[in-house]
Length: 252
Image (tube, rainbow, N blue to C red):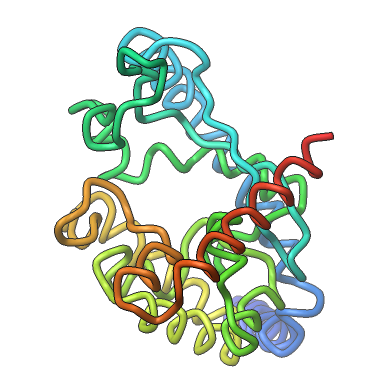
């Protein structure tokens, strides 16, 4: 057989495979890619994981990892892992200082490059998250979701997503949720690959749109609703209490 026939057969096979994988991407192949991508990331970035863990231990203390309960697909709670980016400094009464006061220069760098989030690869391997999807919000954000916004919980949360490449935290909450819902309606292999490439560019090349204007860290959704008079103080307090109860029940 001539060499060009072999090349043609190979190209045709690859094209057919990619077509099948694209067509059945979400129901079957998305999880497969999550596992392969996560394992490759762990293998390739293991030295970086080790270096960052040592730096976090030296500069911020123990524990190295920050763990927090987040809502996942269909509202199921899971424990998310990150490299910690803040100290545990407290005031004279034993209360934690504000995020702005506890966020060090090193911690800001971790957040700006998104390197604090790479331990979420373990969440992806466990099946709690996906490479691409709506970002997992706080439980105290989740309790304020209306029926439409709750649709973002119909898929697994992601390490990155459409909102992250279109402003990240520096866009209104409503716009962020709009991007999340838009992504859910257009899940595809091509779109996920495009988001991965743009995420790398945003985090490591342009390094833009990391923080919400006027805040050291992102403003909680409930705080935003209260500040803009979209909910009453009674609704706010009741929802915050509900969030605490959800987290406490999960921890038992």
